[in-house]
Length: 149
Image (cartoon, rainbow, N blue to C red; front, side, top):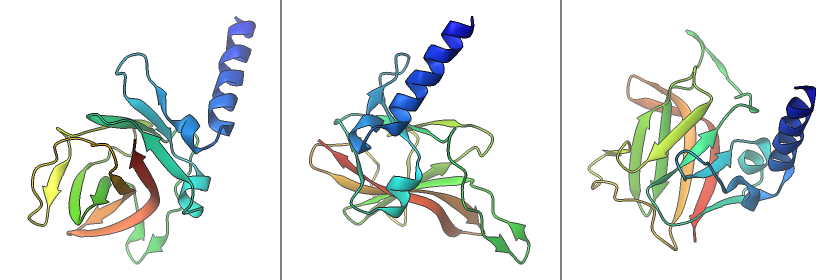
């Protein structure tokens, strides 16, 4: 039992420590690329997640603590996800209690007159953001760039 825990911990560290392309590990259940939310992709704009063309990806926030700025009404809670690319805006609810988030074309809702999202196509580049949506105002708490190749 202890051996299994040590192997799991070692695998977790290896996946977490790898470069930006390491965040493209397919999950066995959904076969979607796995993007691990981290500080590097948030702070270094040259660090880009790479995903293959498809219907979506999974965002793993288990090892990330969002920087929550206080507001007049208290701290913000991550409750919304947005994706922006080619002047197109899409969003979906973000369950703050969940640590693994499936982001798929069928879940992303068009914003501001945008056409329906029809999947991630090769050669596209997106900015993704997790943040707080209150009264129609989105405050990003984490952002990163995703390229589809």
